[in-house]
Image (cartoon, rainbow, N blue to C red; front, side):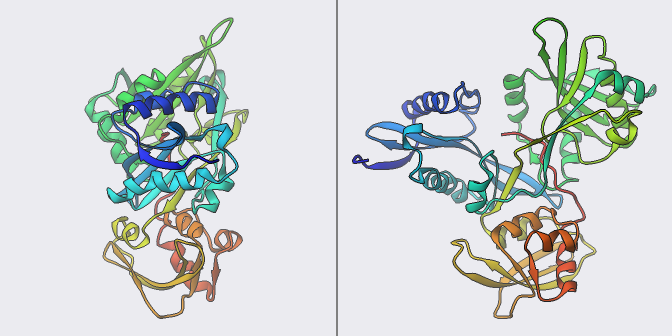
Length: 390
């Protein structure tokens, strides 16, 4: 095309133009472009005075190893249909990341159906992501709990519980104060709290109703945070009590934590699992991301590594040293014992490789099995799980 392409942060006029472009590109109105106006960064590509590409970026923390790590969470990106095919999305992604990196982001998370494109740019999925559906009657017949109280509404202690539980996984967003209002406005969420009499809140459930055309509804669970197995059972019992109006309980993609309370508690295995495009992670600044991450205090180890460069055309030698709950990734001339691509690095960082077998089958190379085993154990104390959507 003859007219020059420029990238810039969006002002109010360009923000409105991008809203219109996204509606055309996605085929439907994208609510987040309105709801996140006060919180997101919007970078756009302009040609001939028209917005032809863009996307939102959120600078938030994600928990890894129990510590908050500054992350560039990218969402709602698109390219005008008439501009596709010239790698504009790649250039647009770099422009979207740039201001967030300048503000401190050292990792980046995305959720996209274009996983091949994301992989070419260095993102990788630490775990598969599933959405679950179960008959409400099956929950009613399988779970019982009489000693939990259920309260309607969100309170400060419930949000504190959510943050405390989020630290126990690799990936959840450290939700800023505006996060809850955004989700409530976008999805019409209803919140419920669970506790034993006289005890603090131990469970948080948020859900939305999806009305059926002729009769009844389905309930869609957006948040499922439980401090213990009995709490999770109480929450599933509560969902089962909706059987007179809702035939099905749906757990939105990634919402159900990766523990077996649901499947092990059902009398009949009649659930439906649907595969969704996964959340993907990219390490933007490896030394800083490793420094800021949490590490087991009981762990002391040193592993020489070779890691693919940011440009993907060379390999850099590093030494990883972990001691007393802190870690350092420093340049070295020592030959690495384990070789990681940028994508391997992201999965390891999130604790996605649970065994040397899974790492090897993903393409991780090591000159010594023990070195690979030691490296994997450094991040497997917590499991990867990202229930937040952006």
